[in-house]
Image (cartoon, rainbow, N blue to C red):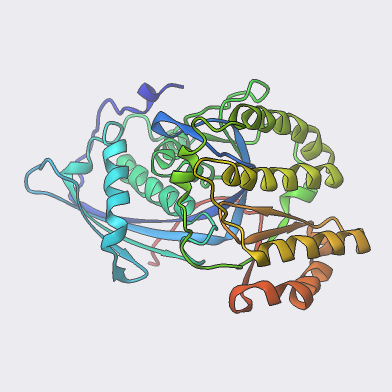
Length: 366
């Protein structure tokens, strides 16, 4: 598919007003996307677990204007309060997707959104937030009688395509359980334009994988992901890093099929450390991990060596640690977390999550 396939040809209905709500999850990348080209095109492919409990719920109220204007008109409420500082990102999102959603200037919108987890703390709140909003926009397009959107596969592809234009990793937050994004020669139908469900065999151990997120630092990151991505332009190690991502995706095909946890751990932890190595070796360089992040990593290594339990870590673009482990070891790993790792979390806080099925439309109670 090309970008032109997402430009609607005609609408058959006139909708005056309405409301739609979607709940969309965050995701945690196993092979990391770091670096992008123009129009939110990834410099390398990635694959992620869709999460179940870390979600954004977004409602879109729409009222047709008496006359179409040349502006996007909307109000934004985050967790019940007007949030003016979020508006520029939504404005930019609408500007980027107008070509593919030409009805946006026909309506006045009220956007209500809330997270089940801390905003801007490295749990990909932009991924769940932008994917939820993209799904709401697609539901409006469907109500308007777009000639293409009745096809469910197309609906999700275009929603993923739109979400990517708001936040790259958002295109991986619509479906579950494993989502791949970015063109890769050995993954059929992979695309830089949208995420796809991982097309190969997945061992059952990965379908219930646990992710306990240790909140080391809930504050706003000192350097945004957008800035970090841009610093990959001209990065001295960028070419090798992008090749590494392709290679690791190839290696994971056998890992996902066989349930080889030893190899899974080696790839996932290497990817996490490589991501932060790219940050520390960019120009200008920066560090998002904290001393307690390193303490937790070392504790996990010591625990794994002592118990032989296949528990590992990954990191997103922040200080928080995602502790990954099979469901069969949940009780022992949670005991370890409570006894030895919670002390390194801000206010002792952590979130228990698990691989999930993807976004859901919220149907109003009758």
